[in-house]
Length: 109
Image (cartoon, rainbow, N blue to C red; front, side, top):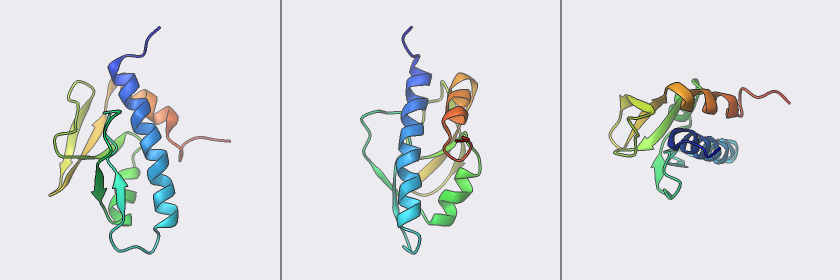
């Protein structure tokens, strides 16, 4: 069975989140590190400048992601916070279940 657009986008966001987790590990002391846009577009390579504290605040929820303005997909996520250079989206439905399951901070080894 082929993945739905919501599920495919959620899997892409989970992968980008894994990369951004590595950025947090290596950029611990950077004043304004850049993170990959965690949108559902598999072709997006845009960056977002966030402080570690901003990123950690978003990551406190396994279903929230920082994305560039206009990179949200209303069919499976809603904008819950707007900032100058990015928005925070929150997944719902099947997409929320997929990203929660794939969240590296929630997984057990």
